[in-house]
Length: 360
Ligand code: ATP
Image (cartoon, rainbow, N blue to C red; front, side):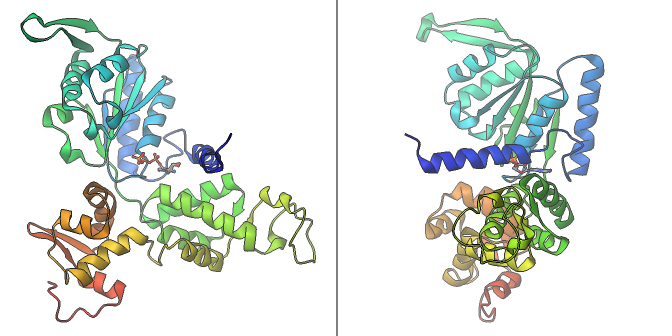
């Protein structure tokens, strides 16, 4: 049997795949990083060697996985994907590394969550394409050296600060991805809209970009919800394959609408995103819960991360790597040695009077 929820996820994943740029030239924004990567890949190609190891850091959804795929695609090498949480023992990593084909690109997402013993094995693998496999225990334990095929490691992390220095130092190139500017997100939306068959005029595009928290993945997700909204509520005359003309458009035989979703107006965007709890500046329910806790419950702070996490019922790591960076970036939250503090902008956004509170 097919679980409908899983099937739906698969469809969304397939769409996600179609929205991914496959070359550096198609990758929007991150101008500096793109230039640096291009040079690294070009040099490797000229010398016919695998590119240096690459570390990508930054909040989720900014394109780390996409860049790893582009590195493999542009250097015409196979790609193997894994993640830190899947590598719980040195043995897991040994199995992975020893099965790589020469020149393969190995992508490890959330590399900061790999087991410590595996990290140590990775140092040697990255440097000398060699690992030592421990056999036996106690006094009789011996290590057997094993040569590996040369490979390129692309590591991704939301928290590069959590990586031990010896590991960080072994990457030949480290890039930090920044939140995208609204104009860049508009380009992402324009590109994705063409793939999804929905017409998004400039004003609606701006509206989606403004609400995407500087994050292409969110822009794409919101666009898909806007497309749904247009399919269901949009002006039928702007969508193709519906038989056009008069009639209320309800009931039977409207399957053709999936061909071209129609045109999204600013009002469609606002209505669709309100339905999904995305506010006018793109904050979602969790963002607002965190802000609300700092402002109302803790009177502007300072409040420690773990207290905050318990208050909103979310893991501290999620608050720290997903929620906070954007709230800090837009100037709503400050980090002090004593904890998180809300700024006057946060009060204004929540429409809470700031007087009497401890805001600096
Ligand atoms: P995570 O680390 O959580 O996997 P990520 O940073 O790797 O997140 P991706 O999965 O690479 O994010 O990107 C998310 C989505 O955003 C993809 O569908 C991709 O198409 C789109 N995207 C990301 N960056 C860009 C970009 N620069 N240009 C166009 N689309 C992008």
